[in-house]
Length: 208
Image (tube, rainbow, N blue to C red):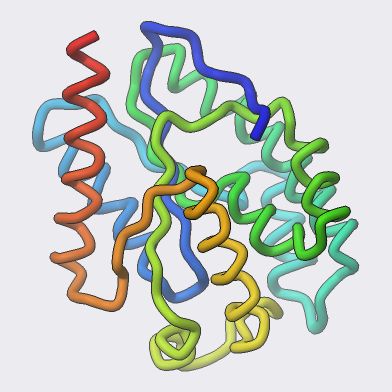
């Protein structure tokens, strides 16, 4: 995947992915807390962002009564991503911080890149996105999502959608884009597995 690499000597960019109900938000927040306790300057962020376009995504796409065409979804998510990068992620990285992002480009690929043609196009409209230093996928079967999410919160939280999304994520794992972590275990086990991946990366990164 062609994305812009961060400048050497700047902060570290980590993203955590997963289907809805996978526990990625809890995991991302725990990661930031654990990093701060170890003395790192770490911050949490998420997509959709807190910006203008992120609010459009939340209100118009995720909380709507039906799904938008995938082309339109992909465009709005990409626009929000640019705004998120320029106004939050890049400034934090330039300040030398560890940025932990709850969802990123890999979500767009999983949710909107459902055909080869769409996949190539989604990658193209996101080609200026900063490449994460470490991208982690928390894997759970869609049945777990159904059990964990007692009431539907978005038009994408259906078993059929999440099944296809999981398959798209696993394809990215096989391609080497994402590091996989078993998510159908305790929160502590998930946190420990993620902490191990991040610790290994940071040891190598700060040793260079």
